[in-house]
Length: 248
Image 1 (cartoon, rainbow, N blue to C red):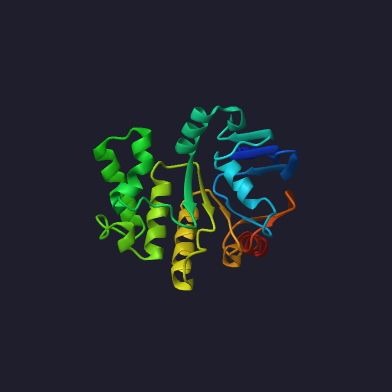
Image 2 (image 1 turned 90 degrees about the vertical axis):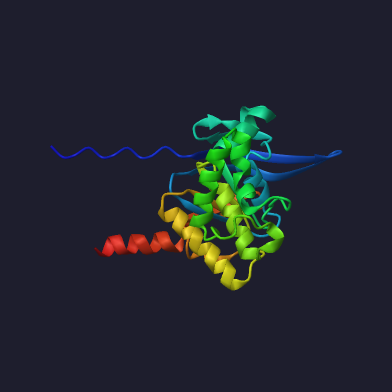
């Protein structure tokens, strides 16, 4: 009797007809006009498109920073579009890690303390925070910078702190907004290599970017235009892997 096929994994993220309308007086602007998509464990997804197409609004929705005007958003099986602000904040801290273009580090805190911030809001003990933060700092090559503050770090080092902070609560998904946008080419490549490593270890990554280098590395590219999903296609890495499987 042939072995049974393993069931497909459930999506981590499911969007169903997500719409976002901004109202200014009597003027309504439709920014997202019915986005439906699923994102699965272990995917490395890049969201791309021209300025004003809705990328940032979509990322804010995925990040539970903004509620859709209508539609359903399931994150880890929970319809977070229906949650109140407090429950939404808890779901965000529990399930998501954020990496921003401008790093968003707290200038008064050290590397160790910045990495620990999400764990602090989860209620972790001081010992747990220190243990996890030190381990994450080592994983991004900053174990000798634990007591430094952001102003004492290069842009690439600050982004490494932001990556470690995003991982501190072991989130379901890492979200990033132009994560290499403020970095020189060398630092940008180093950060992209870190993302490759995160994905290779099973991390699920969803990035908004204009950086075409990410297209060469990601498994899937979603392109928006005028608030609509224009294309959803494999990234260069996924195409290369498919070609290798076909040739073997």
